[in-house]
Length: 573
Image (cartoon, rainbow, N blue to C red):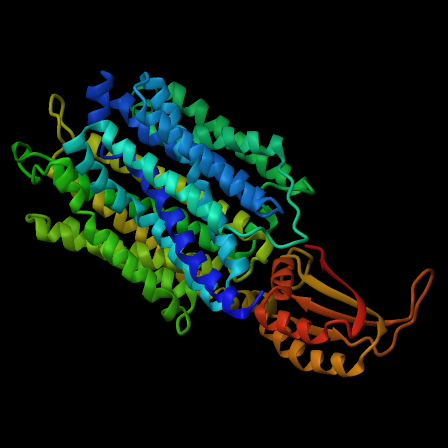
């Protein structure tokens, strides 16, 4: 295949990945502005209609880890097409004149598409040059967030002028186009990949996540049926603990839990969980406040469509931040960008708490939220993927999406509980002060996120300090090692050229050369051949080092110049 053709396909691939990620996010968000229309059309309560949004989030959270594991294997293209086919069928169910139960089934099928975001990132990392791939992954992360800002006002407009079916019909149209786009543009996964789905682990995780998200969404359980909520919470924790234990023992885990233990990945996911709670909290506070009628003593009484337009600054500035962040990433460490983004969102909370008497102030706060969310979302994949091998891209980002979904649900639940606590008996709307209280909770959440990100930024210094001050008793993070045995050397010149490139590449990836194998004594069935030993701070870092662009360049130079046995092994904790 010519270089020009490869570049042409890359140019087509990027907009395809962006479009699919945007469509699945926008379609999943269609439930938010249509809740009232669903309640009146199907003659159900608002709580029941709320499930058209909740069930999409639930199915997305459950499907994401399974799709992430399938996407790490050889059948990624088939997985993407099959998932989009499910989304198209679900979209058709929302349009057809069927009972309410079928609408919920359709929304659940649409929510499955949320799991495709991580697969789009995996495709970008495998099939685009490193710099282009990193920028594309950042934008995919951003559009998966701001898709709600696109879908919300558009769905509200269609529902206002064409009815509920027109809004859902739009979802059917764009998902069908997304399927055709994927059929035309999605490449096959690289050769040599394998992925096995741990079905039992998937079912246990699904049960735990369903309980967690259900408890977060059904706020009335905690206020009216505490005796039911507590046992369900205990069951959720138990299932998630069982799942974690089984994943650690499994040879084919659904999510590589050991990789999640890496300080960079663990810190990023903590920041995502707490930060996601705060970000979604501010989004719901602003939109709900804007729609509150003047009769409540505050608010602006905006219609659903006009309230959706309030999200325009969120979407526009979120996209701008997503475009700027990859460039800033070249000068600023990823965790520092997370900290700065969280601080910006915290500023939006402060503004909302102190000044919300006119609509312009709400628009400014929404713009700050969009910019903060955009930069946070764009920086997050870089922090995680820096220590994640290419083959595990989809799985690692799927886990981050689960964390994000739970965080969003928690943020929504916190906002509902605080506002409910501030609503006097017999009143429909909470006191204005309840919004201030909720905003202060958000300020605290973003402060925690900022501090977590700053600690993450200093993880290398902290880790070095503890290594120097605490004796090695075996209770440290397991290191990783390259053990490379050179069987035969066919071309010494290629080996020499490889050594010049590989040394700096391995050092830049955190590797330390422990032995060049100049003296080897073989025993038992061993062979006295040149053996090289390289140490890394973690097994994940050792795996990721092999797949860096710099080391792959060295391998290209080595080519068939040597026959060697390279093994990447994990040391003892």
